Image 1 (spheres, helix red, strand yellow):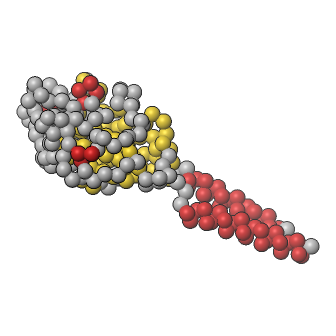
Image 2 (image 1 turned 60 degrees about the vertical axis):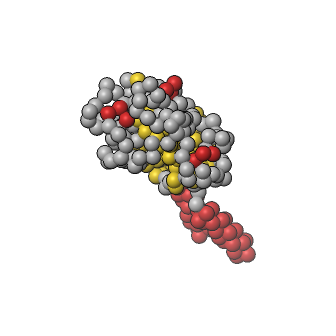
Image 3 (image 1 turned 90 degrees about the horizontal axis):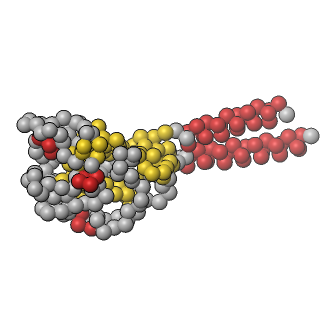
Length: 235
């Protein structure tokens, strides 16, 4: 009887540890593949990148960080990574030209309620502000982050369709509601100009329990059953 009680306590501890593991918050940096071709407005020179998001529970936000280290691109108001658009989709494509036509999930809020822009620095000669924001807030009437439609130009009369992060800048997207993934989802985002500026992307969520955790729980149940059977025979 004492043995069974001790193992029951061990089982409770094991289950508790599994629950803690499954609820642990996770920040994942995604690995991206560059798609073939280009897309965008006029001129359309947006490079598109794709990453598969692994199984996660309760994804709450995604962050794009400029990682250009002052290299590539231009200066002034378009210093650093120039984000054309971002899309989350269950559809896989290798072609940048197709990214506008594939269906996307309605998870992003491109207003000030759903985005947090942390502006980086400009390369000289500096402009009054980086492109696509007003006072540090996304101007999505100009940035149009829901569409891969950027005009890849610095011509004041034609520049349109993106937001510039600046060197070491970043933009966080708070999802409309927590998102859980059990089937493959693909994150697509575009860099205007395809001129060497790069970024990293982080996803914040909770890990789905590892198979080993489920196996551990099953073994606990089996062991308890065997122990109870032995106890009954002893009585």
